[in-house]
Length: 245
View 1 (cartoon, rainbow, N blue to C red):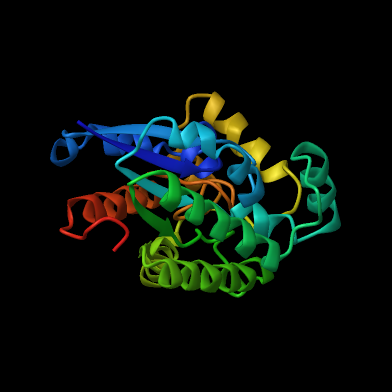
View 2 (view 1 turned 30 degrees about the vertical axis):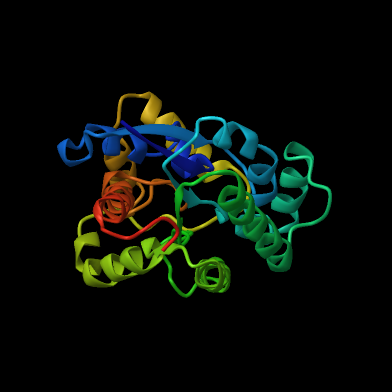
């Protein structure tokens, strides 16, 4: 059986978001794969870099990497910055240049110390207003991801592109939903979504309560966006590409 590590932050951990790793594990086409979840809530790329020993130790055959939403979020307000600085023990204030440095270091070490196929996923939207400052920044960070994937000759899986296409194609589906929840800094949106889920609502029902199509709280996944990630990783794993091609 082949081992696949899904590496990232809360979108991967699946505790406050739809669990796409569990979905991958349930797909009959992937029965020959064992999926290992290495998502940690709140991680920036720098935090992920510090815990690569845990990834390398399982001797993966493939690693998917989805990390950077918190790097973007940390730059969106002073309140966010202070929270990440305190809870993530960051050595410096996050910048896009530091994100690229850490992402390249993650890929470089995985290539050097494993024989795994590697894939980077572009970042999910932050909120569903594509003109918001948060999503303008996501575009910049996704350019970094594409450049790293190109330079390192590894796969780049277009999560962001699929999400944007879906939002544009399904805008009419908001008819009848409550007003769309807007991005807010801090943890208010996240906390409210977690509280709704704790009452027994599915993540999809939380999305609908918040007038959203792909996210529950402007950051985390419902089953549609989680399914997009699973589809991308499934297609990549079943492709005939050689390691790191």
